[in-house]
Image: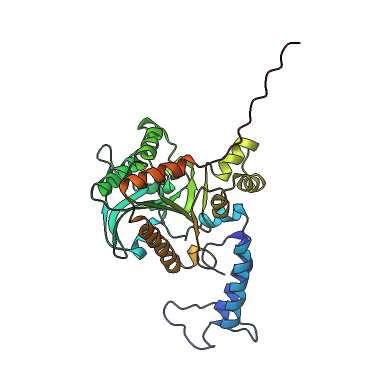
Length: 342
């Protein structure tokens, strides 16, 4: 049996991968190398690793080409999906993390620090969900507190002071909704970030790498360029939250319907003009090849920074403001003339 986390719609792929493991077994009587696969099954006649790998890749491509919105949400939440620290370790050199909001404390749900992407000095700001149970609890599963958003803004203002571009990685189901967070001004902290990020005179590039939940995501995503990884989602509310409000229950059927209605996929957000680009992921999602995912992400970020580096601070602020003011659409209907008394 496969030991990694399995998505329900990927079961046919998992079966092929188990056959690959059996085909890759050493001949009877040989001991596998340290860390090698020692599956107890017997390979079927005529099955080779190369043939099975091609079969698996073809099936993966077919499955992921037509992912439903709800299955896209599941992929975005995959426990092996790369998080902010994973991308920092793969993309950045000389990373120096900065802590604390200089008011209340630190928030591990948001990571901030200076580093280099390629030859460029940048400030990295990103949500962190955690990998182990202890890390997840400490990071509140990526749900940031007010001190997290204030920390992010303080570091962004520091970057602006020295003319350093800002890169933000969004991956949160939403801002933390607990009593303490509300008492310390959760809504105010996010609102101030929206206002102040629109005024920063340096390039800002933001990308949704997993989940982009409501104001918790937008609190670090007011940027000149906004992108999404192909299997991420970005919406005003999670499918479960939407289902609970509209249908008073969150189950497979209502979650699926809510995900469809919210238009939360990268393709939908691009069509609506919410994001500027959809960044490709490796075959089968970023969790299958984090190194390749990081290379694709680094290339996109570098391209965006190169396009923005020649713009003045005034031009950056003006176009950023105009970008967000244009979001959404509406129809304006001329009022009908009032009927005159006969």
